[in-house]
Structures are given as structure tokens and as C-alpha cells.
Amino acid sequence: MAGQIKITLRKSISGSKPVHREALRGLGLRRINQSVLRKDNPSIRGLVFQVKHLVEVEEGA
Image (cartoon, rainbow, N blue to C red; front, side):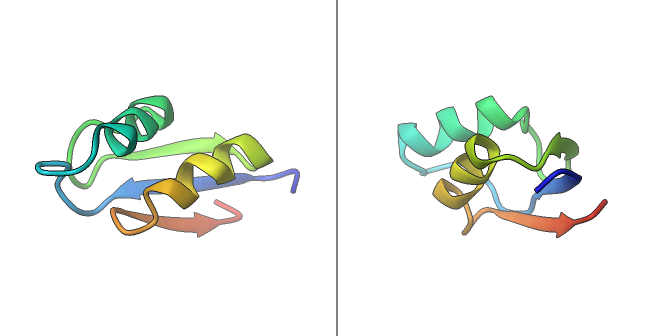
């Protein structure tokens, strides 16, 4: 786990739980189809796991 991952918000956060909104804010995602590059580490993986139903992840980006 040393590279980067590309995280893209694919679904709306409307109606989602506050804990999921906080996880998306921590990842830096605000709008649908917005993508961010983050280091591949356990803390980022934990945030992605919480919102895996809302995002798409590309490894080695």
C-alpha cells in the first residue's frame, strides 16, 4: 500500500447518514463525479469502506 488511489463520488449524498457525509468530507468529495487522488493507506481505506456504496475506487492511479 504505497501508491495512490483515485476516488470518485458516483451517487448523491442526499438522504445519507451524517457519518457518511463526514467521511466524504474527510475524503474531500463534494459533488457527483468529482474525483480526488489520495495516498493508499489504512485511514483512507477506512473512510472509503464507510461510503463504498457511494464511491468508485481506481487503484494505482
